[in-house]
Image 1 (cartoon, rainbow, N blue to C red):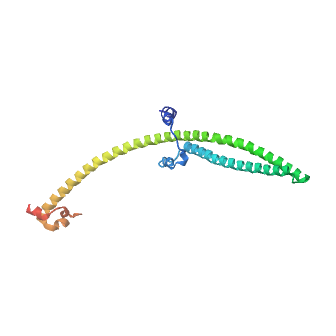
Image 2 (cartoon, rainbow, N blue to C red):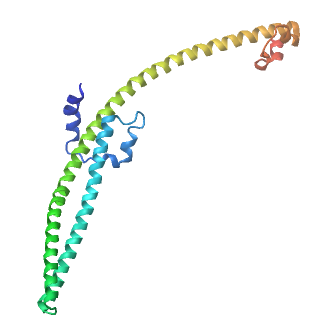
Image 3 (cartoon, rainbow, N blue to C red):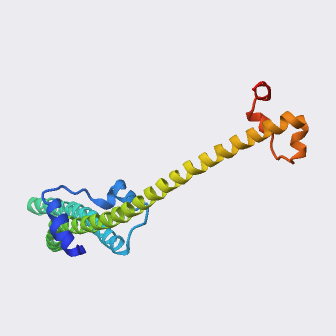
Length: 220
């Protein structure tokens, strides 16, 4: 089954209605690629997702700053308007206050325009993040599928190798036991004839009597 058909027929239906955590913020997701590392496409999509998350944080911060500035400007307008209404200023000061009011209103309009753009982006970003996270999840599922398929094949090969090794090991152990038994019998016979000199006489590299009770052998 091709990647596209597998995604459409298996992975996408499986994800329907599922709440997917932000993958790049999930340490367990990073551990999925511990064996082989992240493929280039997964790295690219993850980087794009992280960029959207960073942008979301920037936009949220900018919205707060612009709203704070707008409030300060509006408060300033209220103060200036009260001063003008109280007529506590001379003609020159009044002219400066009107200029200040005009500038504050212009800045407030700038704030409104910036807020409109930022808030539109603020509304779009969650959907963009969700879509990018969804794409990354599909890519992750595909990589997991491939890795598990490859691992399963190798596991079966290793199981077969272990099985053969166990069979060979049992054969070798039986051979070893038979040869040890033969050596013990030969040693016992020669020891009866030549005594302890049998080790030097036959240039033996080990002493079979370690596994043999000579006294019992002689009595037998």
